[in-house]
Length: 74
Image (cartoon, rainbow, N blue to C red; front, top):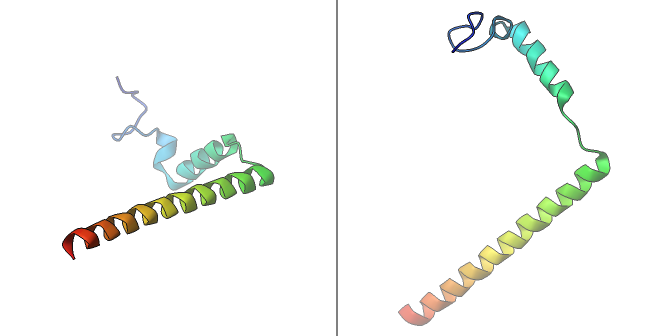
């Protein structure tokens, strides 16, 4: 059941105003556990490495299929 204090879209009254939305947003951002600089750097390197390896694998598979189709349909 819905709370009688909620608005028609399910938002509480303090979330319906721009200042209420900002207050709720800031309260949620205070709960965030931000990564350290070292953790951010190491995870960024890991993401860049995995994206590069994935791109290389996709390129290799693409070249193999291109070569194979060239052998068949030449």
